[in-house]
Length: 122
Image (cartoon, rainbow, N blue to C red; front, side, top):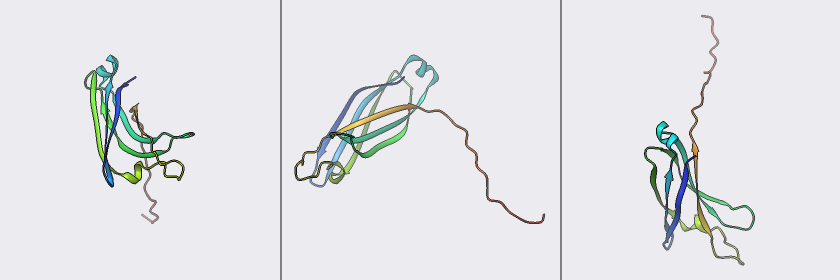
């Protein structure tokens, strides 16, 4: 099972947009390295709230492969401050945001489809 190490979120706030950077190391087992296992990588921003934490945005949804023991990852996006403004009430104006990273082993699956039907006398 891949490990996510040293996960860090950095936000450089601008007047209307902010630069968001998520960094971490994806570290793999010896078996994953030998197999060159591919993982679906999902990087999300979430709000830290009492109760369920709201999903703010997905920064990345792609693949990463086990090519060496640890692979350094860096995801940077410029986001509207409106996306980061997750606590916009009269009583709570401070926003608490965190990054969530998931690495799920990719499992190939079968795909099939049927076309439209053509009716005729052939």
